[in-house]
Amino acid sequence: MFSWFIETMILSCENFLRNQSTLEELKTRKFDVAIAEPFSVCGLALFEELGIKKTILVSSCTHIDLILPYIGEPEEFSWVPSLSSQLVQENKASFHKLFEAEKRACQKAFGTKIPDWKELMASASLFFTNTIPFIDYPRATIQKTIPVGGITVDLEKIRGEKLTEEWEEVLGRREKTMMISFGSIMRSAGMPEDWKSGILATIKSMPNVTFIWKYESEDLDFAQSAENIHFSMWVPQTALLADPRLSGFLTHGGLGSTNELAHLGKPAIMVPIFGDQTRNANMLARHGSVIVLHKKDLTDEEKVGSAIRSILYEDKYMKNAVRVAEMLKNQPTNPKDTVVKYTEFVARFGPFPQMDPYARKLNYLQKNFLDIYFTLTVLVLISALSLFLILKCTCNFKKIKTD
Image (cartoon, rainbow, N blue to C red; front, side):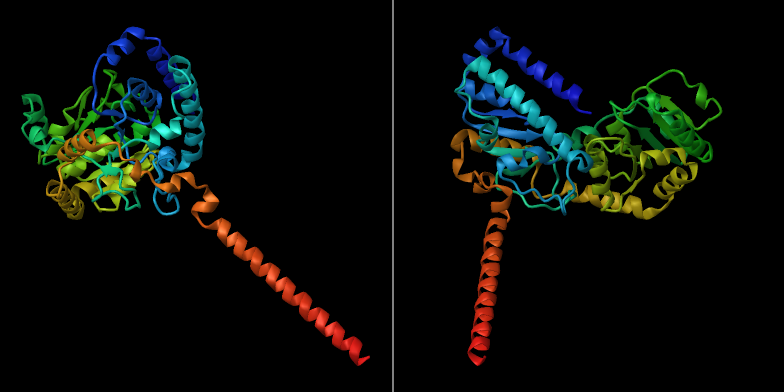
């Protein structure tokens, strides 16, 4: 499933390393800190070649499960949902292949002096994650891991956005308005026909509600009979979410959209399609502002209709959404300030080898005391067996003596 992505990343790394003019230009610069996302180790090897020892890892999603053992962070899959629970092992195997291929490419370009990618990850001073502790799943973390979720949501800028006359008119058509968007990757125009039919049937059953549908095609013949849909190939999503006239949102649950609706206080129906979207949807559903549907439920007019009516007409979803938004608005620290202050701190005092957890050097048996438990179990069994043999010999000796 990830083969195309892995091959693309390897080619990208190899092509970059062949760009000698850029590499030479970078060597003339003096960088204090370098930041990279660990979906690739090509950048980390480049930092090493440039002599940048103060590095920061950053994740555009939540904690990246596949790198946790390499930075010494606990893997708690028994009680913390992973980035993509169904594909964790496949992800690990695929990315391990990617990292090894990139390591070979970097060592070919820079020489074997480049450390192993595991050490490059572990030597990073900090790890910024796109998580918001107040809405995310609770988990154990190391001191290097700094949550900066919501950094892309600029509430002041969003609330200052002005809608065009077209969108003002759309929002004023009916008392309730629902937005439908599956993001920039999952195009509504390309979804299965039975999904479209299920959504359309639900829309037609609710003539008193306006539906704004981000639909990336001008072929709208399938919806000619519906008068309460406004199709658009692009929507001003954040401006609409910030407008009180928008009543709800039907979304795929990408982390960008998840953070936006959480900060802007909108209840939603989330229909995860792939990747981290199932985790995102269920994460927010815990706060009572979201209803989660399986993607196959889109064919069921009754299920979709029931979910939309609940979001639009049951006050608890809006109240919970507003509470989440107020909580995030008043959280003790600002993610932008956090990134700036921590980065400046790394530039001044980093790197921090003392913060490297010893746990990453332990194997599974050692980390969970299984080696000790095994040794104790063997000792107990040996002691029990020895005692049994002693007692047996004693009994036999007494029997012989009696005879």
